[in-house]
Image (cartoon, rainbow, N blue to C red):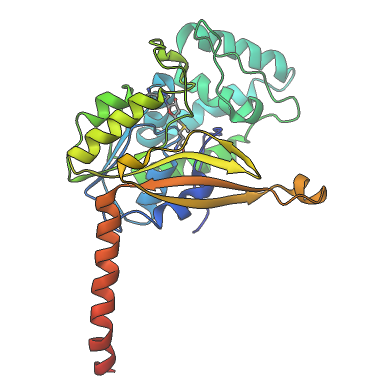
Length: 301
Ligand SMILES: C[S@@+](CC[C@H](N)C(=O)[O-])C[C@H]1O[C@@H](n2cnc3c(N)ncnc32)[C@H](O)[C@@H]1O
C-alpha cells in the first residue's frame, strides 16, 4: 500500500497495520463506522482504496474529534495555525510546549492539540486524574516540520472531505445507532477498571461492557471487526474475547523486536483481529463463488 498521509502522531494508531486489517474486511461498504476512531487510520486507508465513500468518525476525546474535523474539512485553516504555533517555539521550545499545554488545558482548543501531539513523548495522550493533559515534550524533537504537516493534512482532507459524520460519544451510543448496512471497525483501548464511571481519561474500557456491546451487534446481524488483545514474545497483553461471541480470531504479525533479536531471543509482536461471523461467511461465500467460476473461465481461455 502506498504510504498514507498521517498528520497526527498517536500511540496506538493502526496506520502501519491498516493494509493487513483491510485485507480481512469487505471489499465494499455502504458506510464505515469507527466508534474508537483515534486518528481514523482505517477510514483514511479505506477511502484511499475506494472501499467506502461514507464514514462515521467517533471518539470520546472531544478535542481529538474537533481536530480531525478541522483537518478534513478546513485543511488550510489548521495547517496555517500549526505553522504559526510551531514557528513561535524557535527560541525556547520546551518552555513554549508547556505554555501551549497550559492554554490547551484551559481552552481545549484543537489547534493547540495538534502541536502538543506532534511534540509530546511518543504521541502518547496522557491525562491526570483531573482530566488535564499532562504528557511531557519530547526533548530530542521539535515536532513535524510545518511543510510536512501541511502535506499530510491536505492528503487526509482529499481522501475524506465531505464524506464524514463526526461525534464524540461513548462507543455504546454509536453502536446503538448503527444498522446492518454499516460496517463497524472497533479498536478499543485495553481493559480499564469496570465501574469507573468517569471515562474522561480514555485510558481503558470495561471488558464486560464491551462483550455485551458485541453481543448486541451479533443480534442485530451487523458485520464488524475488533482489534483487541495481542502478545509480544511469551507475554500476552489484554484478555481474549470469549468464544461464546462466535468470532473468528486472526493473528497479525506487527513486527520483530530488534533489541530482543540482538539478545538472541525471537520476540514477535502479534495483534489479534476478531471478525464477526457474518463477515467470515461473506468472505467464504466470495471464495466459493470464485472457485465455482474458475473452471468456466478456464474453458473460455
Ligand atoms: C487504540 S485507540 C484507537 C486508535 C485508532 N484505531 C487509530 O488508528 O488511530 C482507542 C481510542 O478509543 C478512545 N476511547 C476510549 N474510551 C472510549 C469510549 N468509551 N468511547 C469511545 N472512544 C473511546 C480513545 O480516546 C482512543 O482514541
